[in-house]
Image 1 (cartoon, rainbow, N blue to C red):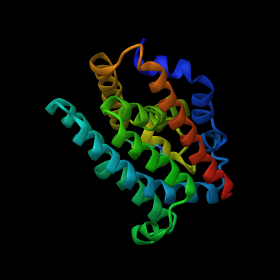
Image 2: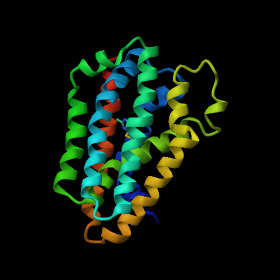
Image 3: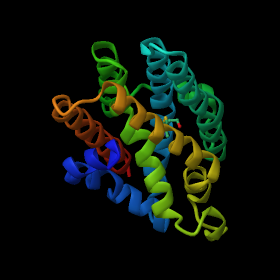
Length: 221
Ligand SMILES: Cc1ncc(C[n+]2csc(CCO)c2C)c(N)n1
């Protein structure tokens, strides 16, 4: 079993509470209130700025050039791809980048991002990648779950079609497959049965913080 499968099995309830959150179901069937999505979108942009720092920290934690390259791919996926999607969506929702950047971070955003940065500061590269896994591989799972037939099969009028399409699309799924393989590689080199309970605790906490992030969106509805 891959490390991801073992972590998911050990943190089943926290994982389900994240990937099957009411916010996700509302995104999928289009019933999510616009106010909830807008709150999410603004905070997610602020979130991505901090997660870019976490990926840069991963490059600094790397002890091999191959690990540094893998961390760089994650950083590029955020600053070159994901943040562009957000800016396009923000524009559509009548928000400029300057307005979004000037918005104060919500407590849920601070809690999640600074905790990940702290895991990265105090732990090694495996700890940090496990803390980042619910983010990358959770969104890949959600993308596949919301668009099992591919984003092209979604109704053109679906309000969250572009968001779902981004995470269900081939480009992101391939980034996620790379992250999955890298996680297993890190586990082979740095993992051990003795470390597993602590990795589960990190993974479960990240999944709960992801659920808290969805809830922050819903609470604004
Ligand atoms: C709260 C929240 N969690 C996860 C993601 C998805 N995401 C953020 S960085 C990254 C790695 C680069 O691909 C991914 C997949 C998000 N946008 N917002």
